Image 1 (cartoon, rainbow, N blue to C red):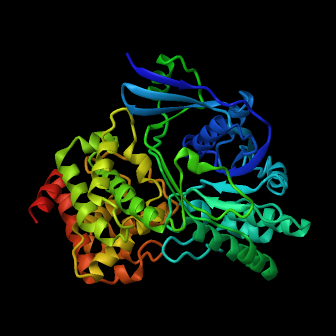
Image 2: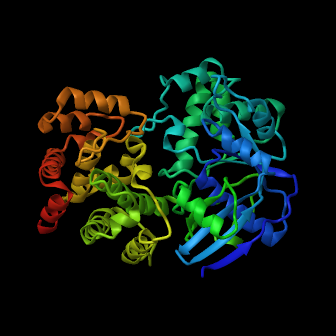
Image 3: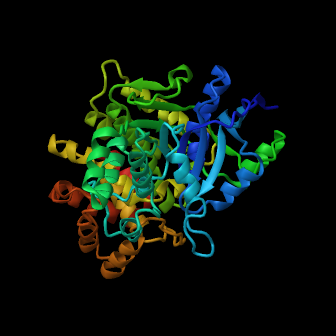
Amino acid sequence: MKDVTRIPAAEPTGHIGIVHLGLGAFHRAHQAVYLERYRLRSGDGTWGVSSANLRGGVALVDALRDVGYHYHVAEYADRDHVTLREIGVVEETLFSGRDAGGQWGRDLEVLLMRMISPDTRLVTLTVTEKGYFLNPASGELLADDPMIAADIAEPQAPRTAPGILVEALAQRREAGLPPFTVLSCDNMPDNGKRTRNAVIQLAERRDAALGEWIATEVAFPCSMVDRIVPAMTETDFARLAELGVDDPNAVVGEAFSQWVVEDDFPLGRPAWEAEGVEMVADVAPFETMKLRMLNGSHSLLAYLGALDHIETVFDAVSRDDLVALLHRYMLDEAAPTLAMPAGTDLEGYAEQLLYRFANDSLRHRLQQIAMDGSQKLPQRWLHGALARLEAGAEVPCTALGVAAWIRYTLGVDLHGNAYPVDDPMASRFKLLHEAHGEDVEALVPAFLELDAVFPPALAGRAEFAEGVVASYRRLVSEGLDGVLATLSRN
């Protein structure tokens, strides 16, 4: 018999104060939950959300609209203890992407009108790393990307998140309205600074004065978000049905949730701290800790596990050798690169992460984590690895991870099973594999020369390249069991 806590939604108010870009599962299970809890506790109905999908996801937009925007979030402490929340803080869903007929911006006009409304004081984003159209290594705007090029050519009909922000801010400036605050909730280091960088670079290509106004007047606070929210499966829906929930828009996640936010909101904000949000002056230490320890560990499991046909995080951490790898990576390679506030217990944090990974109620697929590796590796592994090498230390776990990622981009695991490589650079990876085949001495340097992924200072270090080559050879010749056994002896 499951222990189920059921929490109904607060009464809707019809008042929208936040526009969100990226109506995905994470937003619905993280930011929306905090806002729902805040509204339920405080009775403050001024912070309803208009949430828009910018690419794909039109079915979800319409499905939520059809049921009055309510949906459920199941928060599992473990298989037998679940909190079931009804979420009603989303008051509107919109779609500005490309429809099945190839037309863009079905609800774009409504979205922009909502963003320039004086009631809108905050715009939040979960559009994934690639949704900012920045070079992951340099932070420069990808001006030649077709989507950004379209926004430069037709700024009044934007297709990207940066383009939509620029157009909405331009309209607010022209109307004499103060700018909304822009809060990135994506899993990137310095996410506020990177968002600011993308928006200003794009604005400057349109109007230097607009770029200067945004740089001077718009707040882009950074944030760190943490909650494991796997993609929904038929098993998840069946488990919810057992609890009496028939909701095709439901989301499942872990009970743990964390949100750390830089407190810079000129037009005001919800009193999130009452719901456990940490409002701080500097988010950087927390986000770097999470990216390198949690997300870096996830990526290690994703690429090594997927190559061995392991399906989920739980399955992976059921193996002692992979748990030992994560211990070594977190404490020997990631933790020493962090500058944390006094009293931070990084060993305790590592143990907490392993406990969370072992939550058997979640089916967090490794293939889901493996997506968009070219956008994730710099902040999860590479900047930390460079710091360790410059300090005279070794990074065998990271070298093995990079080797596994390169092998993963082939699209065939070590047992011959094919899978799609979901990455904006997938076509480039395919060409490199076709050009170099099994010539590891040529293949690895070719990947390390991808300066959109690898910082040149790291790629140019001979010991790192040699470590990746050696790890790649062992991985292919000895398999996962063999390469982990060899690593444990060194």
